[in-house]
Length: 183
Picture 1 (cartoon, rainbow, N blue to C red):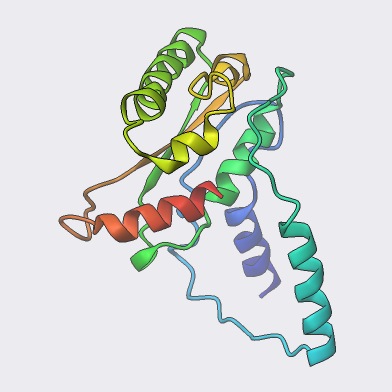
Picture 2 (spheres, rainbow, N blue to C red):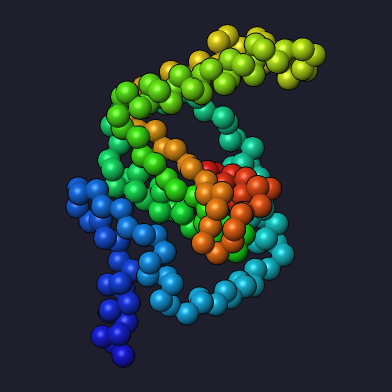
């Protein structure tokens, strides 16, 4: 029995221990195993209330950050982030996304140009009566995205619109799934 347990651990062990960048199929080992049962923890009401208040205090400090460090990031950190994002729940447990790690300066520049053009269109061309445009008008150059080319890596989340299991994935569910994954 112990050798079977060791084999299971070896099967699901992180395949990247050193500096080499090797991505693996995030679900290749899970498929072979039976479903892992969920056991609901029993927490008393006082502790639940306390934990909810602590969680609220943490969440209200969230900010949308558009300033990023140019410092290099270990590829292992990127892999761990993507593996974690890959565990996000999705309809039918399809995980309809693919992650792209971009380090090429020319591709980052191309991504930046595309995103800035789209944002400029949102802020400039669609001004006609949009109240949110007035709300952000005090921000200068709100469509500029220098952090895209400044960052050592850009993580792009691509979504699948077709699947082997389903001919077309419902867009409403797709965007909810992708949003959870990106968070």
